[in-house]
Each structure stands twice: as structure tokens, then as C-alpha cells.
Length: 259
Ligand code: BTN
Image (cartoon, rainbow, N blue to C red; front, side):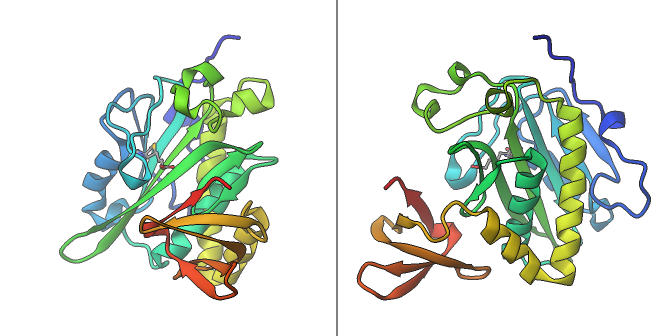
């Protein structure tokens, strides 16, 4: 099948007025990391809602200092500048996970804190970075969605855990259509978050693959096993441990181990 979905800002842009997210769209053929570019735009609060896309990143990064690899044209890679956002970062993170899952479409789930899963494999990741400037704080929402990869395109150690939309849908996704849907979905969920963050948490819980499951978390190099009973937007994952006690695990220091 031939791909003809080179990223095109005119195809991504929506004509709707009163839109913040995607009010300005910049597409790079290649850059180090869209998050690096976005940081520069975030210096100016007027750039709120600017979105940077790239066909390729030479130094894409993921959570926990990991690299984020993708061949040119295979993914939807973007960073959204939120340089005058009032939502707290925890709710921002949850809203974004819900928005990306909905943009990916049917069957997409969330693995805490914000991996997006299709058929038990990771299809997308989100990296939220905070930047403090003299007079304002900005958030950079970096999103990578695997679109056209085939299983062998992933590094060997990831082949059993990573997937792409094309693999799961058995057809070619159009990245411009996906990007447009993604920006609308982000705008929609940020709007809801401002009005009623409880709705974000409710939707996040509906999409979560961990809720009510027995999980093992690695927290500051120690393992804890128990039943995931909820999510606290500020404190993180709520786990009823096998010992009977209830503990919270924050996203910055916790990873989920395979049970
Ligand atoms: C994760 O580890 O799951 C988060 C991955 C986030 C990757 C995206 S790709 C676009 C943006 N630019 C980056 O360098 N990283 C994020």
C-alpha cells in the first residue's frame, strides 16, 4: 500500500473560530525533538495553543529519559504549547491521555499514567514537560502515535509490547486526519477539565486497563503488589496492597511491572 499522508498544516488546521489548540501549526521535515522546538515558543504566553509537528525527530525523547524512536513519516509526532494554562499538571496529564485515546479510536485504552494501548500493546505515548519562565509557567505536551510501523520496525526488545494503528486496524491511517482529530480531542478535553475535572477522572477510569486489576508497581526500586482501586489526580495510583494497607504511587517515581 502506498502512503500519501505527508503532514500538511492546511489539512490539519480547522476553520473553527475560538480554537486555541492548533491556532498556529508548524510542520518540520526533521528536528531534534518537537518538545525542544515547543519550549522556544512557550517563552511567549501568546503562543498558547501552537502545535509543532515533525515527520522525523533525531533526538525524540520519552518518559524516564528513554529515547523515542520513529522512522521518517511513520508516526504522528507533535508538541503542544500550553503557555497560559490554568489546569494543574496532573489533570492536564489525565486529560491528554483521554484525548489521545479517543483520537486513536475504538478499543484504545490507557495504561497509567499515560501510555495508550491497543490490543494490549503500546500505540502512543505522552511526555508532559514543565518549563518555568520569569513571569509564567508553560507546559509542553509531547505526543507520539505509532501509525505506519510494521512489527519488525520496532527494536527487537519492543516487538512484543509495541504496535501501530496500521497493524491493529489492518489498513493505512491518514496522519493528517488523525492529527486533526487529535487536536480537536485535546481542545475538547482541556475544556472539560477546566469546567469539571471530575469528568476527566471518570473518563480516564473508564479507559484505564489497570483499574480493579492486580498489579505490581516498582516505586523507587522496590516492588509493591496489590489491587489497583483508583487514581488520585494529585497523588497518583491508589493500590490496596496484599498486606491490606492502601498506598498511593506518584507518576514521577513509579513504573508498572509485568505481573
Ligand atoms: C513515552 O515515553 O511514552 C512518551 C513518549 C513521547 C514521545 C513524543 S514524540 C513528540 C514529542 N517529542 C519528543 O521528543 N517526545 C514527544
